[in-house]
Image 1: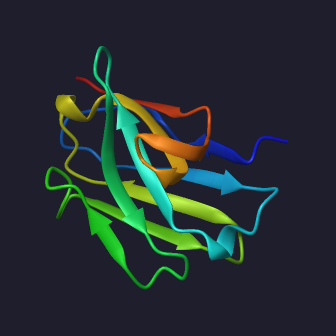
Image 2: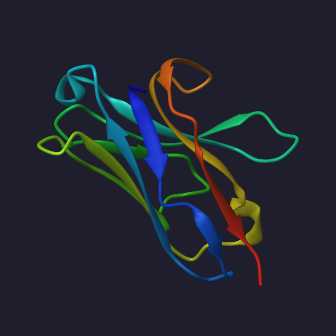
Length: 117
């Protein structure tokens, strides 16, 4: 069973919203800081947001402050990313990871988000 499985991606119109999820298994999710990373076509990984193990502290890349919200439910071993006011530049594959965003220790298969009219 894959340790991280993302879901919830899809096609959304500019200005729309989407919530993606990451289901964790096989490790003690509630003891790990978690991070969302995205990778757009032809580009390297981009840090989106991080949350500490108990959810008390969140951190965002400058491009995402005020639009995206990271959260987690440790009882459900699930990480979330609420994305609002989406633009075409948000089109990417979104991954949840443990460890550093550009050198993760765990990474899911990703969920694709396409912002288009």
